[in-house]
Length: 452
Image 1: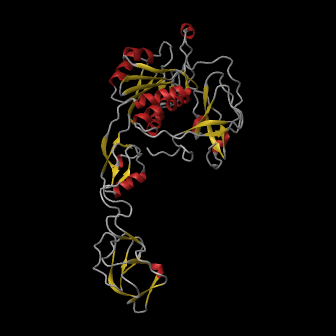
Image 2 (image 1 turned 45 degrees about the vertical axis):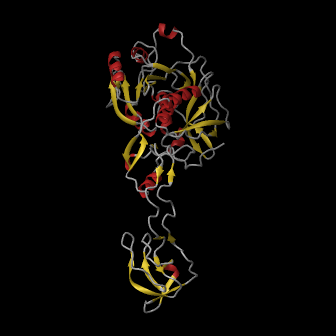
Image 3 (image 1 turned 135 degrees about the vertical axis):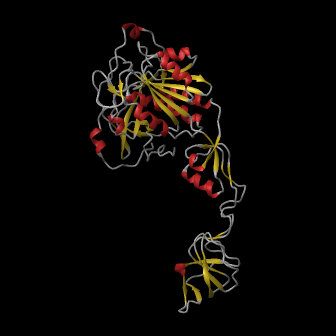
């Protein structure tokens, strides 16, 4: 078992819950075309239509990962500041020795030979030319990072040396070793050394290393481009809900989720429930990944399946045995272009992002697979008879605590969460270990805190 360290209690405690709802007597399909309201009922014919067997949650994620790996690797060359969070496509090879000359590791005195030493005028500062050659028995002031004068054999830290009253002679307060506090040229690497392999993740530390090694640009795998298509006649972008209209909860948040998952979001468009407009948007998009919201079921205004058939797309995942988010889907439009269809309810859409979009984007970008880990539940969680559940949780000491407000249309629970617990079919007892998916803003877990 691996779990996070304890966090301070905060306002999210009010949301902590013992999830005691009874499992549904019959599995309920989630068919919401909206972004926060109640789902519209399906016509009887749609409800009675035979359905294929949905993919298991783990199987669906594996399919998405394989689809991402099948996309040919791209490479671009970008300035250092644009490479953060991307993957190197070439080894990082030192373009210079590090350090490129003998430097002082401390503020103090550069000395030559045994002491005491005659103090020379002036001093040596970082970024300035070195002083003249030191003869045995001479010393000169030196700053950290400054070039070591020719003839110097050691650096004495300021706090380990004293001068006489006339300030003409320097004495050491302890034994001076040859080469002490001198960083010799090439101590860290020599020009041509491989510092990092291709496939390394560019972190802030890698940017610093690349700059020190002489790089202005890096060759990396570009972030996959994503475009969001928010579907629905009933969605408002401002003001309060009224007259059957509801606020769009997905448009404001999906772009940030996708960026946190490593995508470059090239746009968010809002479309009415119009199959022709959706077909034009999907086939005309230049994105590597098109995200749609709602319209993935089989109601009269659910256009995603017909549009994918018309576009000649290959349906890779059509429904996942997970709650919320059952009617999510994944389709391949061409070899390097995919579509993830999210349910219209907000928490169900989050489930779809983490189930299908996350592994797909990760593999397209060739990012490392995060380490999976488990944590014990503080409270029992009732399960669905056949499907997995993704339940918002918050870490408390060595356990995770399920949160209230975990219905498919709700965001209140996940807004207070730092992870989602993967609850197997049938539920999980208090103390049982369950897999945890860290949310992008989580910082303390084994898989958290990525730089994107």
